[in-house]
Length: 254
Image (cartoon, rainbow, N blue to C red; front, top):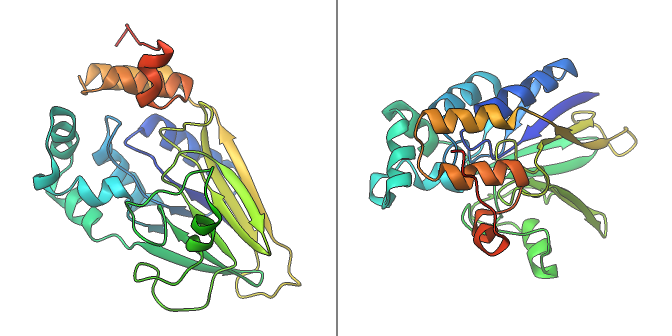
């Protein structure tokens, strides 16, 4: 049996990332896979790139990892800040990341990607259509040829869930650095026999890890990161920043 930690959406939040990695180490899990969006939104994208390169056996490309390294897509103060915080080597590494990774555990072909089989920029929310569910398992230019998966794992929407229909399982690993379902970091542990068949045991476990949210907000404040008020409210409440105004949510201390 092998145990694999699958995480996503660190978004430059090193406080959460290192806390999650310590939790993974404490569980004796040696393999970590990262489903992208290493950078953007948080204050330490370059450090998150370095840690992903050091600790993650595979990192797939997220939508932020795809557009942020390109200067022609940087159009406002915040995007310019997050772009410039990265080194040239960071940007080159992000541009070269794969879009998909496959595993075979206990007779299950598992597809891992950031957002959807259509594009790194096409989102599939927790509340999705039957067509969107089916599309996660489709063979596309992004996924390449190969056996059809029985399981698909992704990140992107920062909302952890597991859904099974007709023998196929779609799961979201949530977000390490910017969770929008509850204000604790999340990741998934997969456990199974590499190359084994369906007679071998298999497990999927969602793990939630509390971390020092206020310490991370302090880093953003000290570095004078743009949009740090929205960042602070998201980390404290797990409410998407587009809803802050209508809900009267503010962070006056950043």
